[in-house]
Image 1 (cartoon, rainbow, N blue to C red):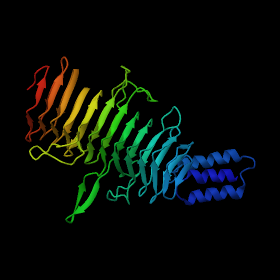
Image 2: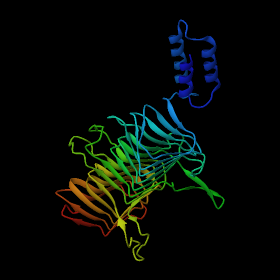
Image 3: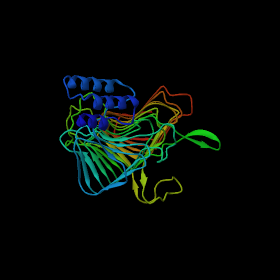
Image 4: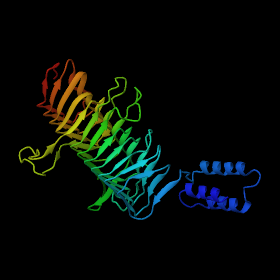
Length: 400
């Protein structure tokens, strides 16, 4: 009986009068008599069907500030960091079983400095859930907070799902490798609302990625169906995500697999560009004077895929695109900017494609091709000022 009570208590998050009554019923009625199995099954069915309750796997709760600096193997448990608590992982490896996850509650922090998070067996683990609060600004005391410095996250379904339980959450990632993940980063809908000069306005999302490497290769524990559009970064109704000097590479060699998407964006705005380690910029063209690392996309089906942006525009500047079937695809996006990029095309590929876009600026891009390919393809332009200027095409079919 004590085992039954413990199991229910350990799998139900939060308190609920119905739960308390059920637990009281178990203790009082002593269900170890005839019919116990049937009655317990009915109780579990009641719990699983109640929208007021949540039944989860057994969980390791981090209830006070904790540091892991030696290897950790978390067997058959989720790890949940309570609000107001920080879990720090320093230069060590943490392994989780298949389908298990790390949950960062609003107001909690996970900081990984040089650590590795990976699977404990041949099957993917579930990754990190960054919880948020849609009714609060994007500050650490209100949102789940994930900070990655020189870290590696590999062999998971998602490295980080931001805003999974209630929208929001914060991610700061620098020099971090995201390797062999079905989807590396997923941002769910969130508006960072702040009062500025007495007016409620939406500010940019504070999350960023600097000098990060997103990789798929043949050591992955999962196989990819031919019709699967998996992606490294998935943006859904967010504003102002920033990626500086990041690489997105598919090195898998199976010719029957879909090559995947680097950044998939729906109703979102974002910036992709170079990282300037010196912080020194040339006055004339604002280019980085010293220590430039360009963002790079290689071997993908679509490097950047953007739909339904509307007034949430995107900027891709001073980045490299090599051997992708399509470098940049944009549908129904206003005021986008694609400038000063290097784009190398495989046969039959497309460099830049836009449809139903308006107010765009496509300027100063160098496009190189092998065989027959399309440099820039424009359809159904809007009535705002559109600019295609100083783009250079080498070794391929001409375009206007």
